[in-house]
Amino acid sequence: MNNNDLPQFTKSQLALRNGQDKPSIWVAYQGIIYDVTESRLWKNGKHYEHWAGQDLTEELIDAPHSSSVFKKFIIVGQLI
Image (spheres, rainbow, N blue to C red):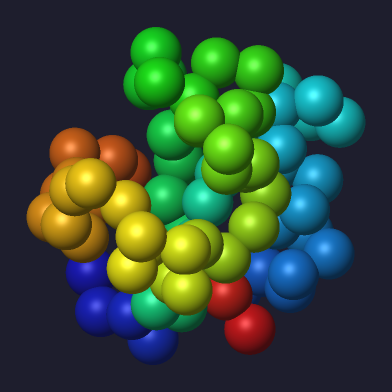
């Protein structure tokens, strides 16, 4: 699927998928939104000091893993 074909979501819509307001747990990285709901590391919308429903592009710099971690997750949309 081409990125241009992805559904688009605003930061406000992404923020609702934080594991608290809606059961879905989503995070964004470099403009792409990933569904991390099934990850045991994102239970309740929190992963160490990071919260779901946000763009984590800047925060990944300090992570002990690379962006390849996102390959495990389903792409649900594009952040606009």
